[in-house]
Image (cartoon, rainbow, N blue to C red):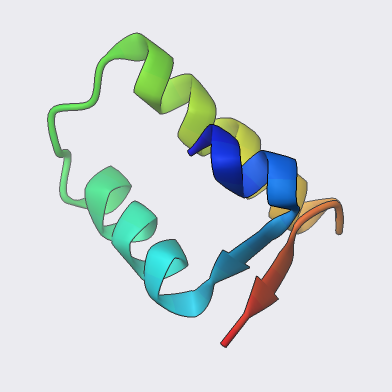
Length: 52
């Protein structure tokens, strides 16, 4: 996940997978939850570009 933030890009498939993990209540530890939150924050703030 740190690679996503470093590259400032995420594929739609990876975005869907992360959403499924969050919505499906997957067993994410605190660090993973924080990383996912950073990714979605970056998307909403325009710092991360979603590509196909």
